[in-house]
Image (cartoon, rainbow, N blue to C red; front, side):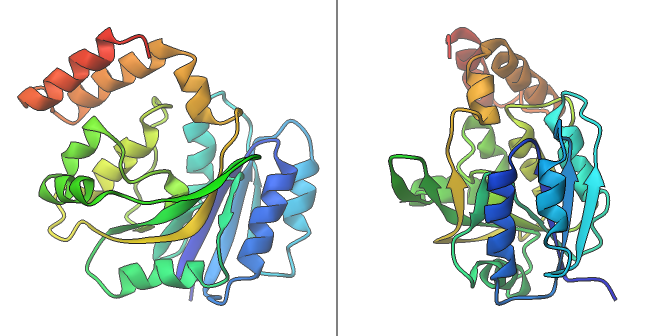
Length: 252
């Protein structure tokens, strides 16, 4: 019988971050999980770190050939996931406490939700603070999950856990890749999500993140908002159309 949770970790040239993440996984009090590391690094440093945890838990290491599209490495980790639940974790993030994974699992175990998310600790070199969804934003996505289009109030994939429905990331996307995944996961679900404000995950904030890359290339942002509006059939909604126009016009 397979593990309950598949912890999927796409990694690229960040051995220190991977080591910190795997150490936080090793310390979890919930043990029914497997770990899948998909590595498209340019050297073997991350491979060596990953394999050093072979005896700590069930680990599957994949050497992935880099394609220049982040979603490909993310999907590579998902391709070997056998768990009932999927827990994405990025190489610059880690579990905040030893009970974090258990609390994520309980969010799905104790509900009919297909998707759950938590608050997070935002950690950089010079500051650390807790962040969670505002009540008004929560009400907005409870009303209609498509309202994520006007702002990803859920946060990064590392702050989420989902039931394994075989859904993968859209490799055409960079900036809105997580939002698209969330929308497709929760589409047509009567009990779409559960959440907690507790910061179960810590997010490492740095200048090297994909978010910062996209902000420096505003053409990517504009194209992806238009792509998402068409893909999810949002252009008939005046509010979404207005938001799309604002994204196209602003310099970012």
